Length: 79
Image (tube, rainbow, N blue to C red; front, side, top):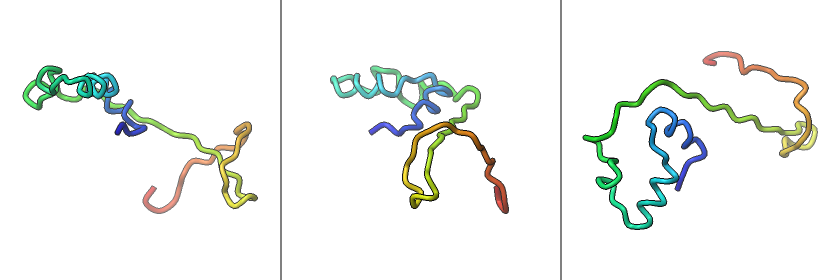
């Protein structure tokens, strides 16, 4: 299973997770792919991913589509 945020891991490790998963499914081993702890490079850099979702408060916050015309940053205690 590949998490939706796998692109973040790929960005800082240089490992194509989807390609690696396909190669493993075809019979390759982690050592053959250089994916053992001793051979892995240290993570490099930083990455951040943001997901925009739309919900309609007047329809019990059901998913919605349309143009984003207002953006509010999260705020408050602990944010």
